[in-house]
Amino acid sequence: MHANWRNDIYLTGGAWITRDHRGEVGMHARDALLPSPDRLSAEINCLLWVLRSLRDLRLEDVSVVIDFEVESRGSNKVAIEIAKSVLRDGRLQSYLALGGPSWLHDLIQTEVTFVNS
Image (cartoon, rainbow, N blue to C red; front, side):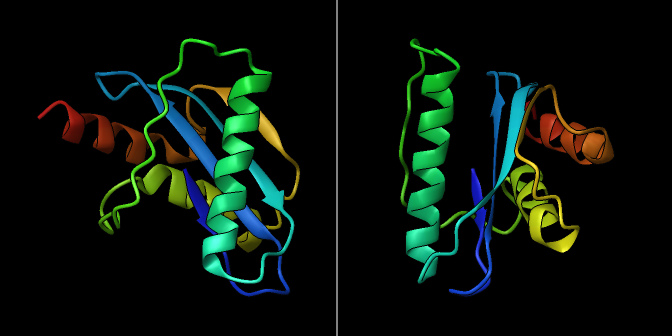
């Protein structure tokens, strides 16, 4: 999951991606979320959107682990790039898709290789 927050005026770009134990992508989603007063609020709103999405998909056997550690710049690049694309490219249409986005295929494969090493 990643929330791309700029400031309290602009929409926040949100994205999430699921992976199995081998790092293979299951599905991903993106959305333009309402403006938030600060980064923490944007991240909480994004987390709530992810949880609602999983509930709407009726994924009842999902273990959700919330980790409030700071992620490294090298981790979660796919979700970060999807979230950035919401504001950068004006991709304001919400969507959910199986697999990963084709425009990030190389990055997805790099992350899969990292997970399996």
